[in-house]
Length: 343
Image (cartoon, rainbow, N blue to C red; front, top):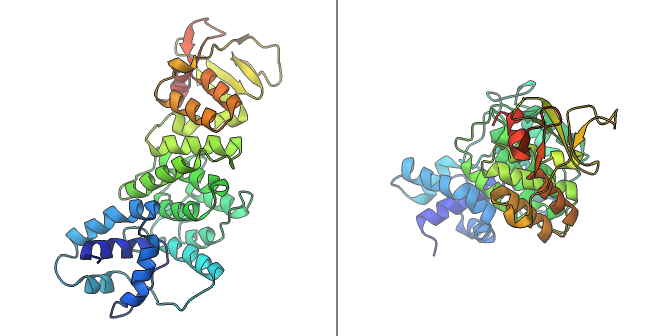
């Protein structure tokens, strides 16, 4: 039998998903409890909603009956049975409005790159699994414009989690990548959204080894995982493996460098190697797999387990060593990347 705490937690979780059947006066357990049962083992739901619901219970709703607490705190309209498509569309609309702290974000008071964030719910309701959809460009340019976050940016994290949780692994790259970019942006303040970030990390870890992913999507999801874990270097720059060039700076002479790793080859240069292939280049010595530690070891292991041996090869070079083509001083590649990233 459900106790008061578990009832409140599960109700909060269902509200966050836009799936709860509520009431205006009395709690209809015949309607709500079956819905709660559907989501009681959903790790994403629990991670996002559980902790905050417990805070609500202890801080605001001490005393009284649980149904009265729910009545005056959470409001939704009880709906008749709906088709799967209508239920899905309704869920997406509702989650645009609900945060996991149980209230609607005041989008008018929040800001994005172009001003008031009051248009965010409409933009989010148009998102689909198609990464080429213009809706993704519309949302990305608003909440993470050129890597910059705004006051509205963290408020979209629970919605991105809901999308990714309800899509197949092959379709999760865009919501997870945008969430990772928001989290890793230096302007982002995550106060109150730590549960969303942890749930996103858990979901991304479950997704990253899927054989359905392209290499590009796997790189973006690996980067997001590192961002969710607080890695402020690889959590921002790992996606350069996709285009094959990392901006860097020599730790000794501060010369701007290009670390080329990937489809264009493997070398270090300080010149425009695209226009002039004859520019001075120095080789990169890859780190042996048994010497990879921490993040490098994890990235290598994920690549191997995903059967992407070429990507695992690139990871070894990313954590390898070279010499500056200008001052001839040796350096480790992560140090040179950190120099230009300000880490």
